[in-house]
Each structure stands twice: as structure tokens, then as C-alpha cells.
Length: 188
Picture 1 (cartoon, rainbow, N blue to C red):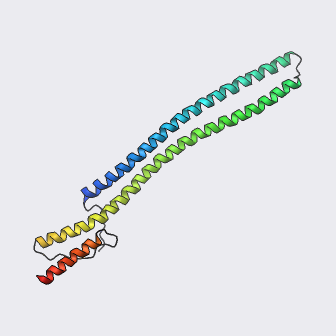
Picture 2: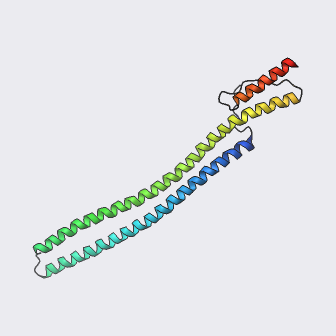
């Protein structure tokens, strides 16, 4: 008969599980908080740099528009120097726009990274909770069996000796206890 009641000693199992989980979650919260603070500060700086780039591009655009307007007032043709200025301006604007787009992408990735970290902690907490319940079950199960055997002995009954499950803890202790009972039976 397979036994699958995972909470055998509810107090011990939950107390142990929540203590371990608590320590780990507190550590992760601290890591996420520090990462979040640094990320928010970096995002603020990046946002300021983007705003500065946008203002610079707007000023440059207006400067070129003024240059072109003045050229059209003086006959409509640009001098080779003015054409070079406009060509350099367009290249600079394209570069500044690419940098601005890259910075916006970094802002988004920072948010995604923080979200992934939080989601990972939540998933890890559930997985760790399940693992710790199973682990404490492997401890509580043998202790429950030993307690039941001792209760049977104290009540004057013959304990129902059975093997522990393969993955249970305290295997050696349980075998010593069974050997003790066998020796007591032979002497008694």
C-alpha cells in the first residue's frame, strides 16, 4: 500500500519549509531591490540622455531649416559649403536617432530583466516549497512510523514492522531500532 499524505507532521514540515523559503525569498528580495534601484537610476539617466538627444536633434533641424530658408531668399541655390553642412547634418541626425532608439531599447530591456527576475523568484518559491514539503515528508514519515511503534510498545501491542520507503531519511536508525526490538523479543 503506497502512502502519499505529504503533510505528516504539519507543524514541523510547514515551519521548516517556511523558514528556509523565508530566508531565500528575503535574499532574493534584497537582490531584486538593489537591482531595481540601480536599474531605475540608470533608466532615469538614460531617459535624460534621450531627452537631451531629442532636444539637440530638434535644434539642429531648426538650424538647417533656417539655413535652407535663407538660401532660398538669396536665389534658391545652396553653396557647396551649405550642401556639405546639410549632408553632415543628415548623417549626424541619423546617428543621433539610432543612438536614441538604442537607448530606448535598453530602457525596455531593463524593465524586461526586472520582470523576469521577479517571475523567476515566484516560480522558484513554488518549486522550492514543493521540494521542501517532499524533503520534510521524508523526515517526518520515518519519525511518525517510529513514534507509532513506540506507542504500540507502550500500549503493550506488537508493532507492525515494515520497511521504510526507499528515499526516506533515518534508514540506518530505523534498522537499528528494528534490530533492538528483535533483540528484545529474543531476550523477552
